[in-house]
Length: 305
Image (cartoon, rainbow, N blue to C red; front, side, top):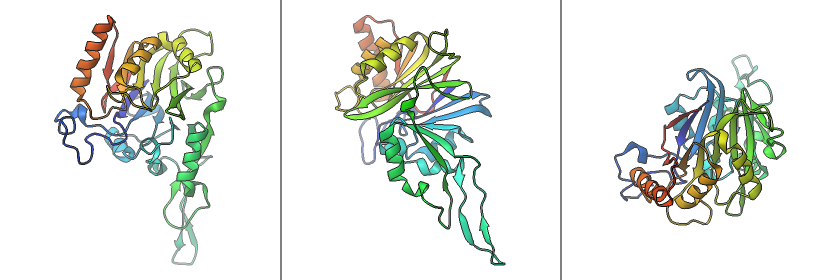
C-alpha cells in the first residue's frame, strides 16, 4: 500500500494569499502546501490495482496532474468543508455522465458515451453527503446540453464498521467518527490483510483530519488497531489552541495513545515553517521523555505500508 500526501495545508494553503510571513516567503519546498488530501494505491505504482482518494479540495486538478493520477476506484470524504470537497467536479474525468450535444449535420442527436455502472462511489457521513448533493446539485439532475458532469454514487458510511468494513480491492476501510468543533467528521482506517475482528494481524494507516475531539468509542477503536498501524496521520493545525482543530500538543497526546509506529501532523497553517515544527515536536517529545516518532508531513511525501 502506497500513501501519498497530495496536500498538507490548512484551508488557505501555503503560501497564503497576500501574506509575507517567514513561512509564506520560505524557499523550502516543504513549506509549499496544497489543501490537505491523500492518494492511496495498492499494486504497481504506475498502474495501481486499487486507487483511493481521501478528500478532493480546490487544488485537486493540480494535485492529480502533479502526481499522475490516472484512475480512481473510490472517494472517501472526511467532511464537506470547501477545502476538502470543492474540487469535486474535476473527478468527472474518472467517471462521467454523457452530455447531450446539439443536433449534428443530418439532424440526429449526438450522445457522448458515459461511464458504465452507477458511478464512482463517494463515501461520507450524512453531513458530508448533504453538502455534496446541495453544493453540487447539478450532478444529480437530468443531463443538460453541453459539457458532461461527474457520475457519482453517494454512500452513507454509517452502516460500515470493523465488523463490516468497506472493501476496495485488497484494502479494508473502517470509518472513525470524530468531531471538528460541533461538526461530525469521519477519519479513516485503511488496512491490508484484515480478516475481521480477532482474526489476526494486519497492517495499515489511520487518517484523522479535521478534528479537535475523538469520541471514546473511536479512540478505543484506534487503540485496538494501534499495534498494526505503520502510520497515523493526524490534524495538527498549529501550536496555539484552536476551537475546531488539534494543536501540536493535543495531536501528540492522541498519537501517543494510539501508538502507531510513525505519526505525522497534517492540515498545517503558516504559523511555523516545516523546520520549526520539526524542532518543536522534537523538543516536546524530549521533555516528555518519549522515544516516539512524530513529524510534520509535507506535500509529495510517500508512505509505504
